[in-house]
Amino acid sequence: MDADLLQRFDDHIGEKGYGNRSEALRDLIRADLVNAHLKRDGLAVGTLTIVYDHHVRELSEKLTDMQHDLGEHVVSTLHVHLDHDHCLEVIVLRGPSGLIQSAADRLLATKGVEHGRLVATALPEHTHQHEDDQHQGTR
Image (cartoon, rainbow, N blue to C red; front, top):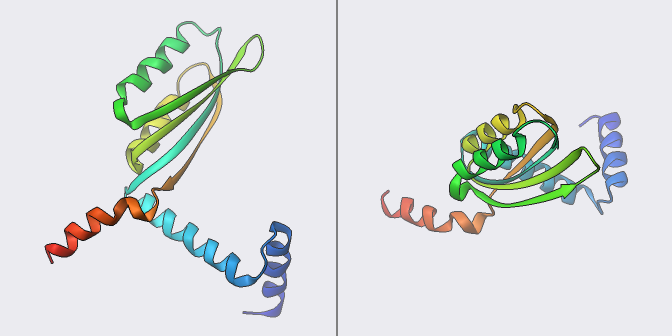
């Protein structure tokens, strides 16, 4: 690795509070593995945060209906009144990453939703242990 790139990396990880390069590299590798898992439509959990104008006709009902249609994939929701016109919802989703992404896209595209973002990650490794054991038994 060239010296300039290494110095920039050291500066960056120092700003983030890493104690050493190994810790930072570990997190970079984990992030890359999570991204690969999500691209393969692996099991994921995510939070969709949306801000919407609650005065838009029937928007609250539409958002609620869309969440009910997702059934068990909606784990929990949090609703916050931001001001007289706006609400914030945080929706916790769980399931195949493709399903979570498409659900988030539909919710975000709903008329009256002003802003939002999905943050998704792979489920922790221990949740896949049973599946891994089953696959090894068939090899």
